[in-house]
Length: 476
Image 1: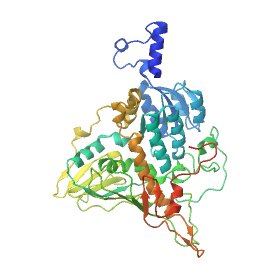
Image 2: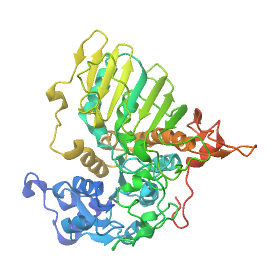
Image 3: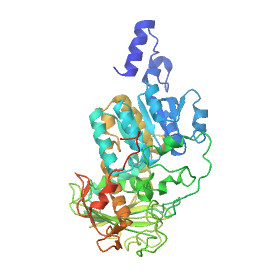
Image 4: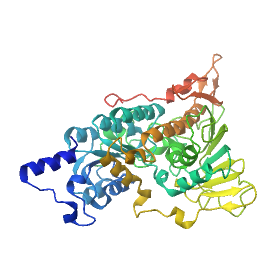
């Protein structure tokens, strides 16, 4: 029996009618039996806003808060003083049984172990993007959500925005025709990348559980170049600029065109040297800039094979002739964006699907009416969190769950496709000793991908990045 039903029926049987009817409470009040009990794992930074969004002014109960760094989580503790506090998510799951759902807003490398443990206990999950640290983990979580019948949502909030919906509407109406080329770019990283691994050992911060922060990753000593925030630039913990922004920026073309797994990938990166004696080779740090091309087969929605070109580190595609020179592309400052090139024109948008536009070959420019992009509520982040909460209440087979824009059935394959680019980026940096005792970079070539079996078929060393080695005690 569901917790809310059990509480409601048990209270009525024991104490008489103790659940006050909605009409007595008045408009806007929610009976306690209709609230989810939510645990928060990762409460600093984005985790704090995720917590506020699922709480939604009291429509859910925040019953437990887990964060390895109590200093960064202090704001959350002050906001919810009655929530139980933990540093280790495993202790939370062991000790707090009356949980319906959890949010996971931790560094990339711990997403999968936390999320899978919660799903195995039949807890619904909201997980920040990217869904996982590697391709294997994304497949595991996608299959686990189906097995345990869990309501899931990845935190790429633009997926629930009206900009992406408008782009799908335009494409389905045939405005730009079939698409054979897409450009996606970002100004990230805005944290250090392409740097030397630190060797000094500064004093660890007070109230920080470093062992739990490391979790399944390879052990390294604490350093401020890892925590907080700067972990994104290290392969041991993060997924670089592509992993950080890909789930936001690649979502519109992936969704609108109905893409599946890529079949090929090729990358080149900045600040990498071809000579063996070059001193600036830092394989543990993500590169400061990269260019990646993914190829996709034709789909039911888009009958052409597709090349998707990704650039980061401030690199972006050249301004298409069809777009007037004084028009920004993507975001208002052109720092991030998407260009979809079709037979009849070009469709563009910025981060989160904002500012969608169509430039037709005949010179017409189409923009959405202001009313068509107005949100139908005052909920933050397009109601992305609220819709997940309501789906959790309704259940796995509900229409509310099926209507979620980034359940793991969608978010899993999207994340796999994005992280496929990181296979090529990391393989590009992968020095390989040949038979004549010379070092080469054999990853500097096109990699062929078998998405179903999660395997690079023409360069075996690249497959070491499909799945990580887990530290003892933290296996998936």
